[in-house]
Amino acid sequence: MPYSKVMLHCIWATKARAPIISKELKPLLLNHIKENSFNKEIHIDCLNCVEEHIHLLISVVYFPPRPKGRGNWFGTSSFG
Image (cartoon, rainbow, N blue to C red):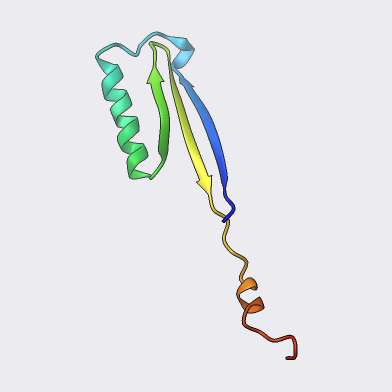
């Protein structure tokens, strides 16, 4: 079955790149993102942050639906 996989690299910066993500805030922030992603069924490949920005790498897999008419092709005779 065909599928597509897309990798998204997301970056969020603090306002004016102010170094406001402290060592105490970092685990709380990353856990919040992980929990939110889990609840929304978003697969995180990599997540980390520094004082002024956050990096997030997610993968999105898409399985296209099967065509509806395909089921009618099988089990029919050419002598209709």
